[in-house]
Image (cartoon, rainbow, N blue to C red; front, side):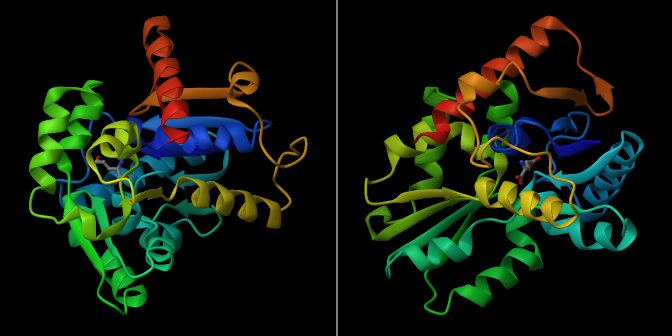
Length: 273
Ligand code: DGL
């Protein structure tokens, strides 16, 4: 049996990467819906239809659980898809607003996400539930998804884009930056260089993979891991079985698989920031 992980594009590899190091005995299917990326500027109806199509693909490919490795698709479609595919465990990702508020010690919290996620009720409700002191601000960064899909992670354009988007915020008053889109993890080095040192960067990938492990464990479907603690990326990267798909088409081309390897290397560096 496989674990399916999907996103509109390469953002979901943040979750795949984390899952590979914590669950090195599993088989994964990674699906980037590149025909429809970006999701964050589409309508909710369109995104729900895309997610439905991917889930049917995952079911056909023998998945014991599926992770919606996309904050936007989770916000829009997780609930209705769980109601539709009752037998399939569907794990979503949500911006880590709750831990960020808890850790901010009264400083402000900036949540960055896609336009669709920012306008969804689910994120608004989450903020309302945990933000008693009105510390949280939401900021859309759709440009980063486009940079990421082009493979442009560090450049003057990326820096200028973020400087412009941050220009209305007194960043010295902030304590937490929440990465509310899985594509944004590729830019942690630039975020780090632009924001004051007291701001802690947080994202939901570890929490999501832990939730995946809990769900599989409860169903006695978790493949045993040495100490259950995960392994060093260098040790595990060549042994784990992952099949990569672009909107349903399997990637077998060596050059493309090589680029995927480079993305993992980048994510490994970003994970340490
Ligand atoms: N990576 C996705 C997320 O976490 C969405 C990016 C997009 O397609 O707009 O929200």
